[in-house]
Image (tube, rainbow, N blue to C red; front, side, top):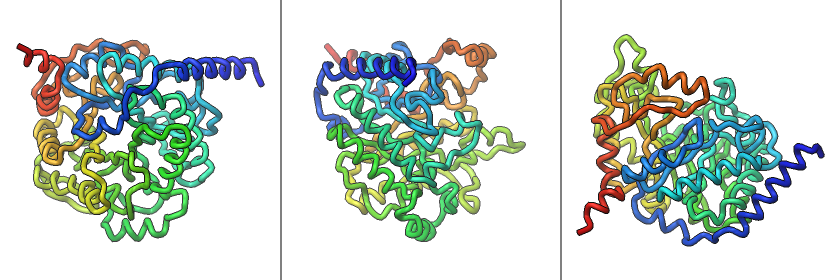
Length: 410
């Protein structure tokens, strides 16, 4: 054992001891999800400061879906050390995560921990832009991923800020496995029949991770994304719900992606919303009715498999803010989610490395100082404010704003 490894293990042991002597979870967090919860996604390159969390809570958010994979680590991959071979949590990174959770708690926010990488599945933006399919080819990485989640759950199990563990963001075992995106239901069923028991069996993978977590943490809710990057039709081929009764099922909504994504604005004639847009193997008219029928899929699956509606989560949704129909798109998506009384988290809140879905910026381009801050690894200093683009989200959040509550007092 090297001196560096010894010091890291000693630091981790001290941190774990301190946490074991810390406060016990005050309440069973599954109750938090019994009523609709609305929040935002935090995928920032720097750990969010207190002002960030205060601002999100000030709008009325009750939770934040927190990803840490862009944060700087002394090792290759934040918290897991090395996605090529997991050997234990990185003590320094764990301390950074815990301090961030404390800031969220001080603001009155619940947190859903959301890794973008697992052993054998390094997030593409940390992997030279290449999709990492190893997790879906070799079950040895399943074992390492289970060990990671067991270790992390053992540390966080009594943290009252943590409302759920989101096991992995946007898994896509289908991508290199021969199933086209948005395939027909028949094709999905046929594909899964061939893949059951293999390393591409997403429900089985989740069952392994849940079993590992429950060995040390029987209570904290667990959130799982559907397949094909969390698409709303990603649960469609699952033959049944997972056995654990404390599971939340999360889907993401960016469809029609050809219109809502950044590459669309580079087209000579960008696709519009509402409008006819490529989807699957053809083109379709996308409007509020098509949004509603598409989003019905995860809720239809839930009803068929006796999953309560309050266990379904729109974990991400959004569109490029400069798209002329973005505001209408957000309104249409949220109208459907309102009717379902669904939990949701918009993408994204004050992201400091990608401005395209930062609705507080309206339709304006960011100044050069924004990109300079990224290059210099300094905090983003742009001022944000309410805009027409943010209104569909902010108006709904404001119903739960602490400022609104104060105004109601005599």
